[in-house]
Image (cartoon, rainbow, N blue to C red):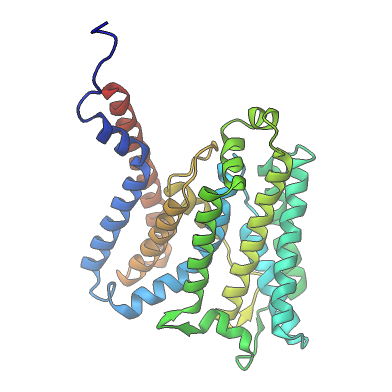
Length: 334
């Protein structure tokens, strides 16, 4: 009987802790490394003005990345978010120029974003078409609609309208878009970890068939996560239009790649079943720091995309290596 029980190996608890939070710790460490490198490369990087500018520019990415975390955790993908941003961006300028009251325009645009997300979600959830195909079609078609509406021109938005305060306003010394992004991230965290919906999202990503057999309305949940990305993209499109004071079909080109990169950098699995809102926040900030830091370091804009892509690939690779090693050490400890 004396051999029936064995004590837990010393240090295994720490290994478990590191293993379960390895990817989050990895991106946090990488984020700090990027901050240190760019603060050395440019003394302006850590100035209050630049930091506030950085978080304001990163806000749209963070808003959409928070919603994208839910989509990717289910095992899906939404490639259309950049095109939805462009369509909403152009629509905002057109509606405001036509004289529509800006609060009414904002509500209408958010509803439009929800409708676009629901339409794509319906094809994915209820018609069984792969998310990659549906949202790839959306990426092309929605950008095309925006081009058709604007005929390729940028449409100005009057700075006299209260609408521009959404993108240019300040509250307690912090840009309004930053407050908006923070609210979205907090709501995302609460929903992801503190509600039944969030638990269902993770369960569907881990095993959709098992989730369905356990009584979860998997199709409805999948549809709703695409509604979330549609709404978040609409909010981002409004913020960008308000900040730039114009609407354009060329807005947010490549935006979807930055959003997906932020989510994956934060530790959310592209295979589904594992997600982290806090990791997504760090991922979005890392994307913002890299872009901002390269500009301040006077790196050629033609070279910036190459460097950004290489850094993101390095970060994801390191993330995966650290995660796998700590996870294996945790198993050995047990």
